[in-house]
Every structure is written in C-alpha cells, then in structure tokens.
Length: 444
Image (cartoon, rainbow, N blue to C red; front, side):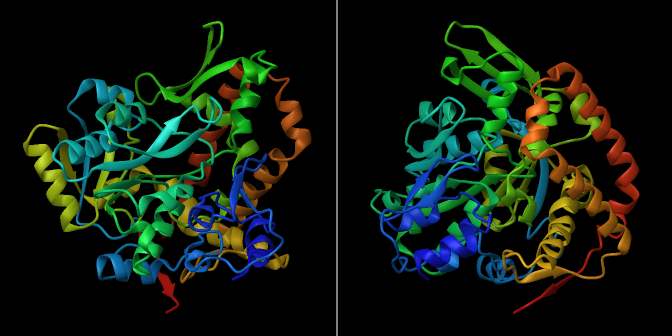
C-alpha cells in the first residue's frame, strides 16, 4: 500500500481511528493534531508504506474472526462479548488505587502487580496532560509512581501506537494498555511476528462505547465562561468517586466540574467518526478487558465496581493469584448478567455499526472491511438506527455546536440525561430483540 492510498481510503474517507500505528511503524509519517483528532501526515508526496501497516490499520478494517482463531484458537461462543474463560465483578483492594482509577482501579492494579512481581519491566500507558492539559501521550511506565499517575481514562482520540518504534528496543517484557482499535492493530502485528510487538506479553484494555473529539472539553469550558483554553491547567475526565465527574482546573486554582452523566450531553455533538463504525465494545482481543459495572446494585454502593473478563487461561491464572493474594476483590458471574449490564452498547456496536455502514455504503462511501457480519436484523432495528443517526447528524454540525455554547450546562445536562433514559426505555424492546442470540456470518 502507498501513503496516497492510505490518505484516500482511510484518512480522507473519515475512517482513521487515530491509533498511530502507521506513524509508529514508518518514520516518514507523523501524527498531526486536527479538529478530528490526530491524523497521519507526511512531508513526502507519496511512498510505499512499511510492511505491516496495510494489514494492521484498523481504519481499513480488521479480520476479527481470523484474529480470534489466531489468539484464542477458536471463534467466540458469543460474538457480542468475544472469547472468554471467566467473567467477574470486582475492584482493587487498595482504596487509593480504586478511588483514583476509572473502573475500580482494576487495570492499574493489574499492571502494578505485573511490574512488582517482575512479570514485566514496563507498561505502555498514557501520560496525562501532554502536549495539552486535555490530551495525553503514550509512554513506557517503569515505576509504580508512573503507573499510578497514568490511572483514569482520557475521552479523546490519542495516537497510542505511535510509540511502536521504540518498543522493540525495550529491554524486557511489556504490558500494553489500549483501546479496541489499538489492541486489534497490536494483535494483527503479533500474528505477523512484527519486531515492534515482540516484547508485549500482556494486553489489557477498557470497554469503549463512544469516544469524543478533544474539542468537546473545550466547548464545555467555554460554556462555563472559560474563553481562553491557555488558562486550563489540568483536565481529569473521571475524577472523584465512581462514576466520577469531569474536572477542569485553571491556572488560578479555580475548578469547574460536571457529573459524568451530565457531561455526556456532548456525545452526539462531538462523537468521533471512527466510533460509529467500530464493532468492538468489550475490547474482544485483549487478555483482560475491564468496564464499568452499570447496575443499580453497584451504582448504589459507589466507590467503583468493574466488569472483568479473563479471556484465556493466562489471564484467569493471573486474576486468581491476585485475588488469593489480596490485591483484587473478584466475584465470578454468569456472562449473561454481564451482557445485560451493557446491552444498549453491545447493540450499538455489534449491530448498529453494521447498519450505519450499510447506510454509508448506499451513498458510495468507503467503509472498514470486517470478516464478520450479523444475520437477519429486522426492519425495526434499521428504523431505530435511522433515528440515532439522524440525531447525530443534526447535533454534530457547526450550527448545532455553536448554539450549544449558549445553553447552560446544568440545563442541557439535565435534559440530555432525561432524554437518554427515556430513549433507552422506548428503544429497549427493539434494541434487545434477538440481541443475545444474534448470529453472525463469517467470511473466511
């Protein structure tokens, strides 16, 4: 593949996931920040891309069926959640880590354990606040302090995989923490036995539903009277007790906050394009994936509870040791209970994404190429998706975003949360119909 083809078929087509793999494998490519997140650019007009980029670009598509066979030796019994051995609800037994992390501190605790037990020498995680307070940059953390400081999510596209060029020269085994598209790219490179990923021994990652462009946090700050972004000193996307809140700290020490569910009003206005066509919600290709345990039972308890999926024997053995040694609190659960916690988002990714791609194809536009596809989705599911897509189209234009700046956050946040709950109740029968038994075609 040539760089011009990557530009035409992925970047300009609006399919780039901003993962950074191409820049990590080819030093002629750099990731440049744009209003649509970091995108690959080059000073050279055209050239043949380094080996591996063409097959490991998640924007072009991922062969999930083949990768599942390669990684786990078989297809998943349920394509919604992917291959798994055991699922749990749990949290870190260390209160500081639990409170500081996004979902019970599970990923932070696992990475710390791996480092302290000398199972890894470092971990690919995010350093917050670089190059701007609301962004982050991937690096190799080698100390407890660095790993703890990397806790929490960043709700903006970050080119994590641009670090690939430095991984092969690292002395020792690594853990890799990434989003589904970044993980899929790593896994594809592992199947190719690419030297950049030879040191990665553990792959972990969070559930990912909807990501937003970084301009969302600037719009929020603007509506709170912060017109100059240079006044922002720090941004924490899930600060405080779970489920947390957005906290922006200014140079003068003043802070502005919004509860997570209120801040979510920005989702339809700033949803990333790649989110709409991603079919992986539960980070299916990791060894261990982690998500918030959204259930009235756990939400009432507070402090932070997480869904934890051990996808292979290595993962289950690790989790069992951490539980027996007092690092993690884990209660094994039936996978169906876990699926029900996030039914709306499994539907959004595992069925809705395919409907959106079919709409896109009708207009002659490029779509990612996957080797799985759902069978027999009813007409009602298409009608629901037309409403969802219509709302996103209506909200994501410049005029709607401009109007948004004049509406008080408390009012629109409250209204959005009310609409979100109402829509979930209205659409639930259609979105859940046949979901748990959804069958897929596999194109081998």
